[in-house]
Image 1: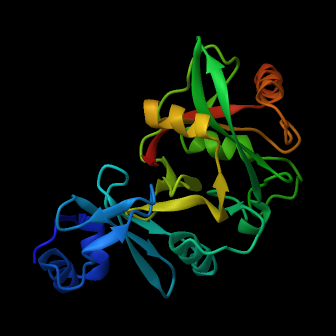
Image 2: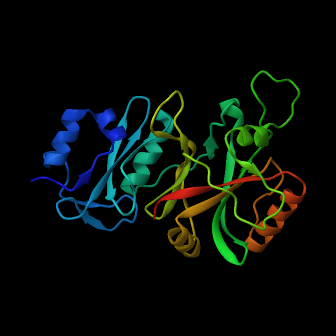
Length: 266
């Protein structure tokens, strides 16, 4: 029985035309499934359904979601991170591990990031936000100055310096925040080398919980504000008012960049 599946060009390129056609014909697609985003039941025979392909170096996992929750897409992750993605997709517990991301132009081992979620009040409106802060200085490979190039590297990617939180930052093309099963999974950036799909700039080894109010605000605006600051600028703040104070201080000191990114998922 034919299925109401959305198979994007990127997903088709990864799995091949023959497999994609079998999915669309209903040969390999499940009739009923649990949406990988909202965890509620779906039926690919009645509900328009997206195919979401998580790809590692050697393995891949094909997941299904309501098309209203996630678009059909390819998410590329490191092979050692894929097992965590598999566990999160199946609802099993994933082992705790440092949250890491590969910063373009920086040595991967140096790019260990902490990510905090919170609501930020800008111009009288609450915005869902993520605050990204490395655990130590980020330097370009080959440099011996011992300096911190985290903000310059992000500015080169399109993030904008923030001098005050009076208005929301502008959108950054090609980037998005992936929320699946009501939890934060990744910040995605455009693929490199002409690759059409997105890749994980930051990938949670264990999906991060967000509050119901954060999730509601994200579903309302379909946009997440992503702030980034050098190590030691923000810290882990216990309350959102303290987080806002830390952001204001970092902005005033010229140590904050930001971008708005569309929300993928619910």
